[in-house]
Image (cartoon, rainbow, N blue to C red; front, side, top):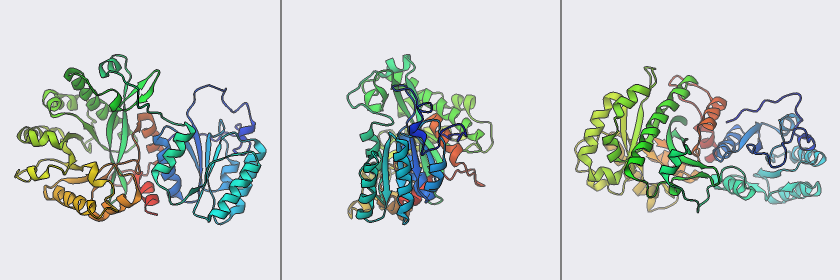
Length: 429
């Protein structure tokens, strides 16, 4: 996450809105900023992680007094203010913001009763503040994402925009984002998966559905090679922070066969002996059709510390049970099994069966698409090893991922960063 310098020359938070010198010129592009005020460390980190993933910088404060005394280069676009048992503290902050003419949005969040929160909201409105509907704790990732979307902050993903992958690559619009992969038992960051994005000059950031359809084989092969190189380079940058992460990319089995993976890894891999290697994800559908080829590739790449994983695992596992040897490092559960596994009485046992199946093959089970606390808790109880999803962190640009590591860095003996723990702790509440 981006770290803001609290300069003595900059306005205090309570006065930031009143200082035209500190505020950027209207229309000038800058990264949106949010102040997150909550005495609970896990909640602050959880909210910040979600906001950072949507392209919003954050500053965190453990109490309202620290928030009121803080200084920033420009006023925040939104303040997420917790209301504790001492509502008077929140009232002081609201009144200070009102006196300064704060122009941004104020989001109250709390587990207090509705009457207290609505009263505080009314006080804010009396001070001419832009008060958002009260956010009751505990809340899910989607609640924060909805707030960001309604305020039109952060990254936008136009559903109608379309661009050709070849055109995007020729114009150097393609970039690679990183999504955290969390060790579910240790509650620590264990790796990151690389995803392609297109930053279009008119349409903004586009998801794969806007540029992958219709791409020819040669262009897809070039994209796969670039993804591998970027993952290796990213691993080197993260290692310089003292964090060794196993990176993962998605490629087709055709591209895997054609790419000189060994040569690329030798040319770009980190020199550190503790390098954890690369994971290459292949879909279960491809592996079922080309199981012998996939197994051969897995054995061929193992000496280079490149391991294969089965993506969307579970729907065709009956076909894979016939294979005596499954040399795959990870099996990523099909998203349909993960969704509602914490509440659906039909889905839960299926999810547990798939996790056990992965373990029987000697592979790590990875839950993907984790978006709510109930599913996270259920996956941990089922013995799922690793997890990915918006609850634990969204895909984010490289510079944001590095900034997040710098702010959260807490290197342990195994060189794993305790980034995922705050989100998991918050989600478990």
